[in-house]
Length: 309
Ligand SMILES: *[C@@H]1O[C@H](CO)[C@@H](O)[C@H](O)[C@H]1NC(C)=O
Ligand SMILES: *[C@@H]1O[C@H](CO)[C@@H](O)[C@H](O)[C@H]1NC(C)=O
Image (cartoon, rainbow, N blue to C red; front, side, top):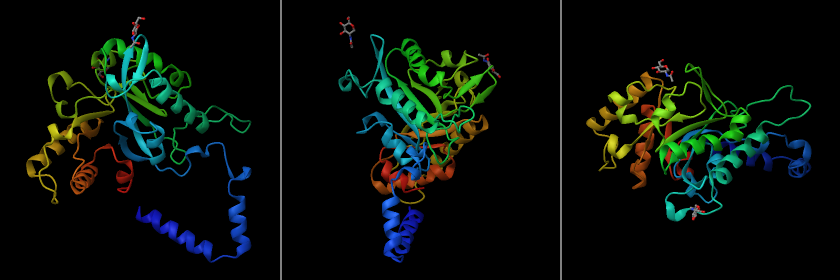
């Protein structure tokens, strides 16, 4: 934030110091054809390790998070009569808000822009959504709300257009994970056995970060769960003060041990249900989580979280 302010103000003073003719050129060439390029849709957006929490609640799902550089987005899905609807609960569902309309098609559209075909392109590219950092994958958490096995099968089918383009991160022969523009992670009712028993697949599982040592999860590695999640409130504790250090010794110990167990297996960490009020507490927790090495910060206020980077 400070750096961009500095650049912005340096730019303004440079511009005001130059001749009117030069200023005229700067104003009038802006937006002319030769100053645009095919992949400039997301130009200048720097990815930040942030998960756009309850993304589908935003005025403009997916695109708002993308415009802020969020590396991770999320959709809650409900299967009715063969269609995956998106919403927080049953009362918020409508005919037009579907996984396809709010996420699959917009993501495809951005990737189409970032991977143009032209006589200059010798072979198909697989750039991610961020023009500035093309190998950054977009984590896409799909939270299964209705019956796990059926709904997750429908999710796998719904990913077909992304799969056909080769845009999905996939596991091959139960051995290597090949990162692509989009990494799908099933959460909520996603059936772990369905994910773990499939040696070739392009979907992963959101393991419980605070229970990776439990017998039922001890075999989980990054091949099953590239990122594991837990409720901060349940796994680390309730924050009752707003003084730095924000975590007491016991909370620090819990946090570090969970992140360490995950890291040993190549799994990234994400906490949801972090405090969102008071603001000072929220910010102290965010900063602390970054210092302790989480892979994604969970955030509702994307404007505010952007100022940490
Ligand atoms: C599913 O289909 C049945 C039979 O056509 C219909 O009665 C029901 O309203 C549909 N449910 C939804 C959520 O569309
Ligand atoms: C994948 O490999 C792991 C160990 O490398 C093994 O435990 C697991 O059963 C294998 N899964 C499948 C589906 O073959």
